[in-house]
Length: 229
Image 1 (spheres, helix red, strand yellow):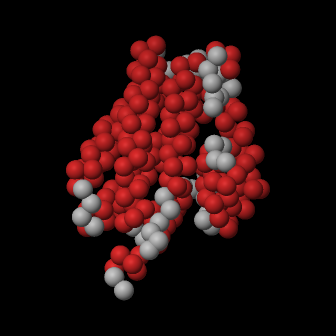
Image 2 (cartoon, rainbow, N blue to C red):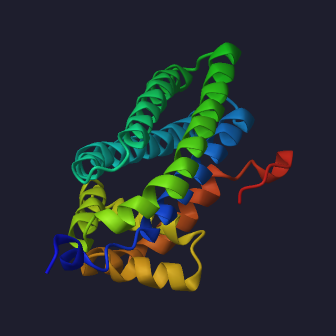
C-alpha cells in the first residue's frame, strides 16, 4: 500500500472554519465595543480588556500551533513553499498589531485619554482587517491542501492543543463562542470531538456563562446602532 493510500481519506478541516468565525466576529465587535464605552466606566473597561486579552491569547496560541504543527508538515510534503511562507509572514504581521493592541489595552485600563481610545480602536480595526484577509486565504488556499496532506490524527493534535491551552473554567465559554454562529450540523460534529468533561461543563455552565458575558460586553452596541451579529 502506498503512503498516500495509507493516509486516505485525509482530514476534515471544517472545525477550523468555526474557530475562525470566532476570531473574525470578536475582533470586529471589540473595536465597536471599545468605541462606545465610556473610559470612566472602570468595571466595563476591565471586563472588555479581559475579554480582548483572552481572544489575543487564543489567537496567538492558534497561530503558534499552526507554525509548529501545520507549516512544517506541509513543507515536508513538498507543498508550494511560497504559500507557506505567505502564511508565516501574515502571522508576523498580525502578531505586530496584536502587540500594539495589548499595550494600548493597558493604557486604556489606566484611564488613557481620547488619543489612547482612538489608537486602540484603530488598531483593533486594523487587526480585524489583516486577520480577515489571512483567514480568507487560509480557508481558500491552505485548508484544501491540508485536508489532502495531513492525517486525521495529525489534524486532531491541533484541536487538542487548542483546547488544552484554555483554562478549564474558560474552555466551556469558548465553546459558547464557537456555537454562536454554528448551525446544528456543524455544532454536533464539532461537539462530538470535544472531551466529555468539557462538553458536560458547557452544558451545565458554559452556555449560560457565555450568554451572560456576551450580553454584558455588547450591552451598549444597540444604543448606537451597532450590530452584534
